Image 1 (cartoon, rainbow, N blue to C red):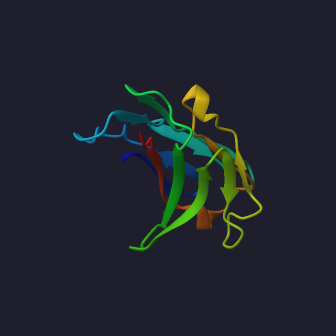
Image 2: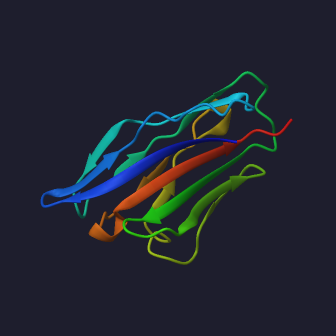
Length: 133
């Protein structure tokens, strides 16, 4: 699998989203790309972009999972999953009514929007794309 990571860091004026370009897994035929920086303020929304390129045909079994690791913790939780053509937003946790799927796997897009940003959203967001044969 290939992954892109977005880290949100708190600041007095709002939220800063930092995102290094994802590395390529040597055994994978998928590249995942994310924005380097996204800025948002508390109460606003941000789009967490996740685009990908594959040397293979995009499978009907493609899956996209977003994980969140809160700042200062080691645990990562799944907050969104796309599989078998359907988006599944986690129905528990702080993102359940604030997340919107705006991606389209056929356009190689796995992006989500988080609405009503809060300081508790600080942490690392990871986009994981799998394109099985």
